[in-house]
Amino acid sequence: MKKYFKEFLRGIIKENPTFVLVLGLCPTLAVSVSVINGIGMGIAATFVLLGSNIIISSLKNIIPDRIRIPCFIVVIATFVTINELVMKAYSPALDRALGIYVPLIVVNCIVLGRAEAYAQKATVINSLFDGLGMGVGFTLALILISGIREFLGAGRLLGHTLIKGFQPAFMFGMPSGALLVIGLLLGFFNILKNRKT
Amino acid sequence: MSASQFLTIFISAVFIYNVIFSRFLGLCSFIAISKETKPALAMSLSVMFVTTMSSIITWLIYQFLLIPFGLTFLRTISFILVIATFVQFVEMVLRKISPPMYRFFGIYLPLITVNCAVLGVAVLNSDMFFANNKAIPGSFLYSVFQGICVGLGYTLAMLLMSGIRERLDLCNVPKALKDFPLAFIIASLMGLSFMGFNGFRF
Image (cartoon, rainbow over all chains, first blue to last red; front, side, top):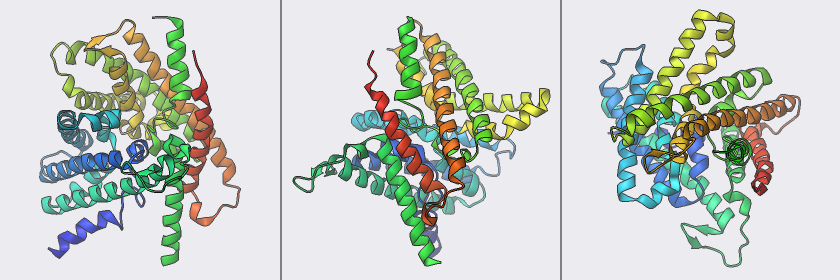
């Protein structure tokens, strides 16, 4: 059990997909305007990661090596389509807020990256925990970024006003604010890493 | 269908909703390959070619396969498969007929399959130029033109960024911000200036 827990934790801290591997940035930056959007995107991506990791690792002996990338993409796209339909049916508001970034989970580098670097070599159980860990790590990163952006850009957190009279900086709600936040966060994590070594 | 429509598509795809600075599509390649101008240009031209061609192909598939058979929910899976196959095909053809071209573009082509800009344009086209599962008048030309313009916007962003980063190599920057973090901060400042284009009105 402890072994699986380690698989799970790795995605959250040591190999966090956003801050350490720097993968899957497009959806991270685009949807992180508010925390709700961030959580929605995180859950959607976790679902796709989990499904594709399990299927790919159980099909690893059947998929021919030379055409593995198209095979992976078909598996991933299937899960993205399931996710798209479920989201349209049960939470249309979130679907509208995330817009074209829902179908674009297909080309999220984290998903294909895990399939290529991990799931095609590992056992099914290990891949399951890896997918779960990566998904949770991605979700936490999204919550951090969208929390900062929602607070600075709109003066709210999860839709609630925190400090009365706080004058929000409009820029953080705009695309350029997202780039600034992620740049500074990456720099901050670099400082932490350098201090450790 | 009129000239002003095309102008609107051009201005909004290249400047107002620039793929990189406003839509955040294709960021991975934008950050990874913008260290020098020459590879940046090669990558941009490959992206422009693929966005244009995939706009054509995906429009045809959407109009003549998915809509008549009521399969529009298979949009994502069919688009990405066709794009991946097309890119692989171009790579094979290039290797056969023009080795110098292959050396110039070849290594970037596989990367383009997972470039969100390409799938993004295809999805945007099917969202914008189809209403109630019917192509609006001029839909095909708009789609192709939007493909070209998104490629142009990507090229513009790539060239600006690589020019800045080439000069930045000679500067003394804080150690923690080296490479990726600084690239994001520069992109942010450029995005801020691109926000100025929001003021365009027709």
